[in-house]
Length: 155
Image (cartoon, rainbow, N blue to C red; front, top):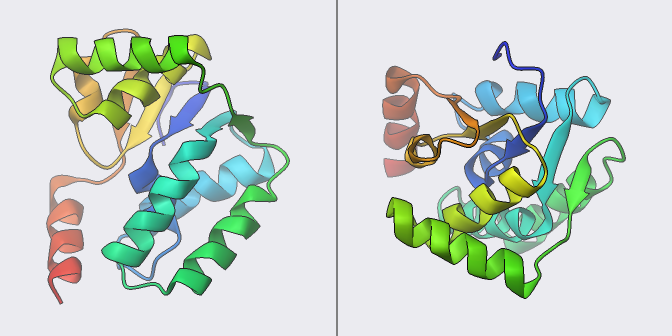
C-alpha cells in the first residue's frame, strides 16, 4: 500500500476488480477490505457503485443479480465515506477538469470529488488520474499484473 495517510478515493476499476475472480484481484481486495474495516479513510462516490456494476456485468461476466448482490453488500460498509454530492456545480467542475486534462467525463467527476473531499490519493487501475496535480494517484496494478488482467479478460 501507499505511504499516504488518506483519505483515498476508490475508482470504479478498483471496486469492480475487488469483486471478481481475476488472478490479480488481491491488489484491489486488500484496499476494499481495509476500507470496510475502517483501517483506511475511504471515499466512494455512489455513482462508482453503478459503474462497478456495469464493469462486473460487461467485462467480468458476473450476472446482473450477482453483481447487484455483491455491490449491495459493499454498500453495507459503514466505515466508508459514501459521497452523494452530484450537484450541478460538481458536474460542471468535473466536466471542466475533464476537458482541461483530456480524460473521460467520469474521471473528471471523480477528480472533482477527490478535490472537494480533500482526498490525498486516488486508487485506480489506470494512469489517467496522474494528469491531476491536486492529489496523488496510486495505480494498484503493476505493468505485469495489468497484462495478466488483460489476458484474463480475453478468455
